[in-house]
Length: 201
Image (cartoon, rainbow, N blue to C red):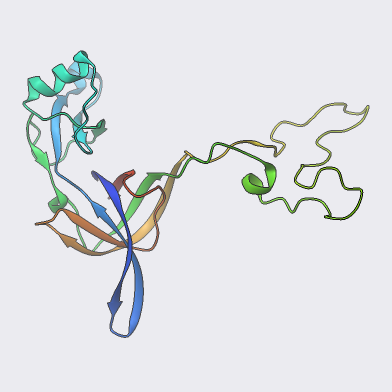
């Protein structure tokens, strides 16, 4: 399985004949291998790769990993299955992807902080008439004497967003190997500049 990390650039559109196709542009700068993990030593065969833009504030321990592999400091360290060249300092590029195959996109959607039930769960709210005291409140959340509790899973206000989301079976419109760009059809989760993982079987 091919796994490649990149950052979301934004959305645009391309023309397929007379049809307008909405697409998302993903910049996949080469994922540099920092460490090669083996089943005997680490419990699994995997590659630890450096992805994202350069990061200034890095702990000495993490910076030492980059220095040992001869790789510049990056924002993230991620593990991917062994693919391509399995040695420290090697680079995983967009050449790993097959434009003829569908791909899955894993992203982290926008964090919206603490949100009420209308924004978080699409509640309709209460009537906007005289006497209404809580226009955007959830209303009753529990029972009376029997069973006398609020059931687990009750939809309430709380933290909204900043969750991992996977969009499956997206078509790759084109791959630009020179500019390290992958263009996929449709929308993907996350803000512009957010970390994105592209997987292909």
